Image (cartoon, rainbow, N blue to C red; front, side):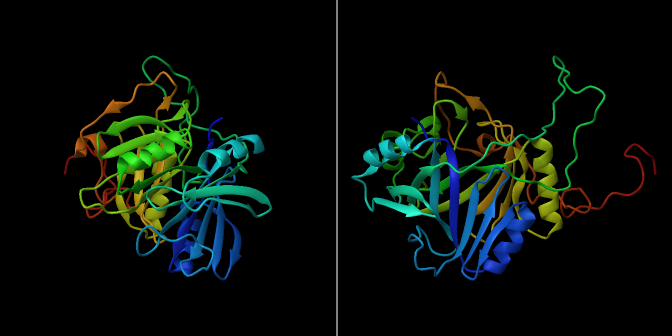
Length: 323
């Protein structure tokens, strides 16, 4: 029994029209639209709900302003769902209800976030991905690597929160939901995956000296490094602000590009994270800029010039052409 991944997230936002434009630019499909709620879908059916922050049935926020209100994790079967219900029944705000025609259980985690579980509604998808030629393996023959004009995110891959008590929150996800630690910043952060075998992390918890509680970012999986770049350039062309990227995380090996999200926190495209098994031993790291990013472009790349922002646009000459 293990959780399969994130099935749905719900934001509470102030400006639904702005969020509508942003998530369409981000590459999601608008599946439903009501006066107080927008429902988007990723390629595999993973849902992103953006509701008006005043909507009566939203779980309470963990911070002021637009932010993530709820994370719904998917399981394989009704039998698994019942086992998790038994495991979390004694936790605060336990719920067991029918939502959109299906059973959904949940509670509040130690950080105050609404955590829910349901039988997964995500569908299998097959996508063509770039093959990378290296010195020892040359799988891409007589064809070029793809160039993407925009991204089509496959799913919500992970979420990252600032927590008040890192030990209590990590313990909840490990003991109640079966999450496994992948790596740690001792006493300050925990990368966790929802099953022994899977991507590097589905959840990252961070404890700040200030004790701040809230959303750091939501990350969307895209098919390969080229879609990280193509998606980021498109979002830049649409006028949205880069926070950092593109770049590469040395801990998870993933390539990333972060933007500011009008629905709350930051939002990330990422690809090529490490794949782990139960044999993996969690490592300890000391936080620092070179641990967070092997390399990164501050302020992003301009989607029109395809160069770093605030630099002279390219001319028509070759780089080696003499003036």
